[in-house]
Structure formats: C-alpha cells, structure tokens
Image 1 (cartoon, rainbow, N blue to C red):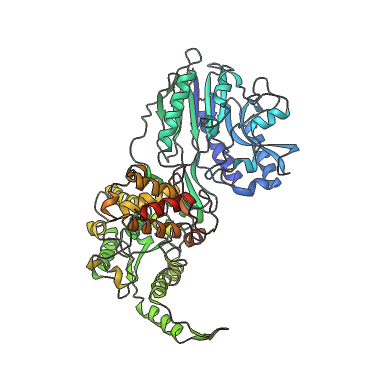
Image 2 (cartoon, helix red, strand yellow; image 1 turned 90 degrees about the horizontal axis):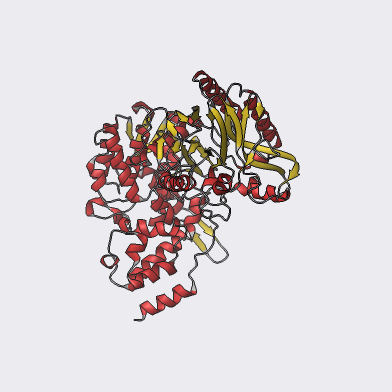
Length: 626
C-alpha cells in the first residue's frame, strides 16, 4: 500500500516565504505520519491570482529558489506540487521571459522527470482565458512548447515514475483546467491515460463559484469512470483577488475511484490534511478514514470565510455598518457579527425625515439582537445646510446665469453621500476600522445606488447576491445563530431607500422594482455564457416563453398590462445597465465573488452607449403597432 497525504493550504498570494513556511510544516507532518507521498496544490508557493507580479524577474528567481528548497526537502518522501517554471532562454509572445504553469515532483532531494521528457516538470496544457482567468497573458501552454520541440500537442503529458516502499507508482499529474477539458480540442486526461498512469493527481487553484463543485464531481466521475484511472484532486484554500473581485478557495480535496465514484471529500474551507491508501495492484484508492461528501448550501460558508479572510488580510478587526432597518444592511450586520465579537461591530442609523419609525425601530432592534453598540446620528440638518449653501450660489455661463440649487433628486444623493462618505467614514476612523458597502447585485446592475454614497466602503460583501439571495442569506444567518437575529419585520417590510416621500414604507411605497421579476431579468443580462440582450428578451416575450428562459417565478402578464409597458420597463433598465451604471460599477469597492459572473474583472465592461439591434427595433415596432 502507498500512503498519500494531501494538504489544502491557505495560500497567501504573492507571499512565497510565508507559503514556504506552511509547506515546510506540512512536509514534517507528512514524514512524521509515515507518508510515502505528499500532494500540494497548483501554484502553492506563489498564489494564483497575483496579476502582473508575474512580470517581475526578481519574483520569478525567488520562486525558482523555493522550488529548489522544496525538492531538497523531499527526503524519504515524494512531494508533488504546482509552481511556476521559468525558461530563461526563451521568450513568450509578449517578449517577456518564458513561464510555465507547471507541476513538479521530487524524491531524495532531487527533481523527478516525467517518463520520456527532457524537462523536470510537466506543463499545464489548457490555459483558461475566460471569466477571471487570464493565464495566456502570463504563461505558455504545453501544446505550444511541444510544437516548438517538434512534438504533438500531448508530447509533454507523461507520468512521473517512482519506486516506493509500497510499490512502484506512475503518477499522472494534471493541473486544474487540464481536467476541465470539455470545450477544448485537446483532452489532456485522455492523452495522459494513453501512457498508463496508475493514478491521476489534479493539482488545482480553483476559485469557489456556486454550483461549481457539483459540476466538478459530474465531470471527474465521468472521466475517471471512462478511463478507469482513479484521481486525487487537491485545491487551494484562502482568499485571492484581482483588484476588484475577491475569490474564496474552498479546498475540498476529493478522491475518485476507478469506477468514477466519489470516494471521499474534505470539508470545505477547513485546514484539512487527508490521508489516502493506494493499492498499486488493484488501483484501489480509499480514504484512510471516512470522508463523507459535503452536503448543504455553501453560500453562507463562502461569505463568512471570505469576509473573515478579507479582514485578516488587511489587518482590521473593527467594522462600522450603517443599518437602515432594511434587509441589505441587516444581512451585512449579521454576517459581520457571525465573525466578529459584538463589541467590535458598531451599528449606525442616520435618519432624515423620510425614514419611518418602523425602519428606525427595526434598525435598533437588530442591533439589540446582535448585542453590538448602536448609535443614531440624524443627518437632516447636514443635508438641509448643504442644500441651502448650494441654493445661494449662482454662476454665469456663456448663455446665462445659472443657480446651483439642488433638485429633489440631488438631495436624495446628498443624503446617501452624507451617510457614507461623511458619517460612516468618520466613525470608521474614530472606531479604528472600516465601514461596509451593503449593496446587492440588483442595485449594481442598474446603478440604483449613489456614487460615493452607499456604493462606498472597504468591501461589498453582498454585491454578488441578487436581492432574492440576500433574503435567503438572511434566513440562513438566523439558522446559523439559532435565533432570529434578523427580526421578521425586516423580511416582510417593502424594500425602500427612504430618500423621499415617494418611498415611504408606511404607505406601502418603496423601490421601483419587482424583485421577483427584475432579479431574473437582470441576471439574464449578466450571468449566462450566452448573455441576453433586449432582442432576446423581447423575442421571448413575444413567444410567451420569457418566464421559462429567465426563470422568474412571476407571470409577466400580471406585471405589465401590455407590450408598451413591458418595452418601456425593459428599455429603462437596459439603458441604465449599459449606461451610467457601468461608471458606477467601475468605481465601486471590491466585492466578494460567489456567482458565475461577478461584476468587476470577471465581467469586463467598457463605458459605451446602450445599443439596440435592428432586429430588436423591428420587433418592437411590430408589437407596438398590432
């Protein structure tokens, strides 16, 4: 029997020395545990999402030096790990030094070379270049390198061979995307399987996305069952970002048997060290101890882990949250309270005359339930004074004299900016921490938030959640606490910004959105691989299939009396989504990514004028004239 130990490390992006210190401890533990093989994830020394740090030659030299250290530490133990390999004799397409996303193996203090290869590492074949991934910007893939050497695309896909006390092992090592090959012309698992590996190892740096683990299980169980080769999957843990989107890495080390069954899975977001036994004769791969697969929703665990890690990374332990009595601020308050002690969370209500007694009571109620300090700072006088000063100003232009008195809409924005940019920012400095952005994805989509106001803050933890997901998360937080820390009134009150009399919640007024429809409409603009446009939406409306296509639980005919009303609503929101809301999103704080398409670096946007296709305009005319 061959004993294999895996470690899903909490990788710190860009911090080679700190990651080495973790790895060194894991090597000692593995030796003490009598392991034959230690398996570490992809890019475990450098981190994965580190941007143009890959362009620094000093950083590359440091990485090489620590690869050497890792190989030297492989005494009495085989170590498999993912890291960057550098070929200083070649350049990439951009003229920079040649880099490979590579997998290394070492034993008895030396690098192992895959069978039939001239390089002491294997190169990642498939370089993802979609969503947040930009691997082709930094690395050269195995197929291109093989072509340079006159080899076929899979020319470098060879197992590492090593004799161990428990038997000889041919280790087929793959890097992350090389097992997500369904949309590629090259299929690395099949090419590697042709060289008769005993066991696949997939070394990954795979960020968490809702539903992604289910897809991985479907894909890897199908591949291992078809090829009859078992697999160990080892992933990062931690938080990494690209400047706009913060991604959690959930670990979730998993074993797949020769018949494609999920044999075991480590708990997500935990410092899991898992031991497996591999029989070279039967190719049976089994966890040393039972590892039942994870069940249950990962959304709240991902949010809690991401927020906790973000605070730790920036060295902050105190947080200020503006609480309005609405669901968004309540969920953020409960989310941060699930991580921080009560006295390290300061909750603030900043009412004007437009804030109802109902919401002010709810804001105070949640603070009491969470046990956190709570202050009320009325801002009506600030807003009125600002408006008075502006109203007293007149400027002369080439055409005429212009008074700068703010409109009622401008006063709404002044309220939002006074709350965040003035009060919450000042309190965060006094309290010794940060303040939050409580926005959701629905608001981000159409810019239903004030730039430099409620879009300000250090982190937008819930900005990748549609409004209905915010409500779901609120229920999950109450379950987490084992009591209703978010009072029922917050779930049932109509959502409202409470910035004017037209949004008075006690009169049943509020946001100009039907969330159970607009959430799904907006989601269709953003998240599908084939993103919807007004042309698609209007065609589905005309066919009577819109509900099925976008997934709304409501009947569109119950919302809009006729085609004219439907079209007016669609065009209003599309113009905002594709118009000024882009500018707001570009300037928004970083968000915690959980969906298949978060705003930021994942959905890359340019500030362009909204556009309607000829087909849309023709169908619009047809619907409005019949």
